[in-house]
Length: 234
Image (cartoon, rainbow, N blue to C red):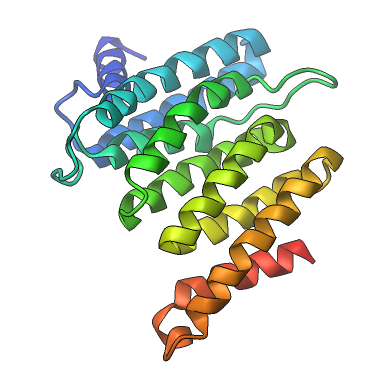
């Protein structure tokens, strides 16, 4: 990567570059893919873990600052828009491919463990905003896909938060996220009780929504995501 490439990449990570949100996400996906390729050739698991941790940490700093402000309304895709940073977190987890050696911690787990407290705060502050919740769920989804069963340490808290937010706002994206949790963690015995508990918490609200007049017609995403969750849980 040349000098201009490094400057653009740093700007994308830190949110300082005068490029569009879409371009920044594209650059971060390229960075994540590069980390993964270098891992297969040269990077140790420790080096990959540090690289991922540092890249995610910058996004978390921005998100944490947003959560602490009184800003509720914002211009889409601006630096005050939490989805700007959530999309960048999603991009990093989406294209970083790494496997943990037998018996070892997944190299991307430290980044997720650092991210979760901030993502939890985002979930609390913006729980009524369907757009933010969709992007938050997407970021967590890609993290789960990246880390797989090694993501089990966040399940208990995540399941609790998802159940509480869904009871209040019925975001369909949480049903889809629950199905991803089942996909990735169903083989972990310690996770079974939390997955079952989450399913039992989400089902009543989803069925109540669909049983309303025109509920099936007006909530197609809930129909699709609930069906996927049920199929995965059988």
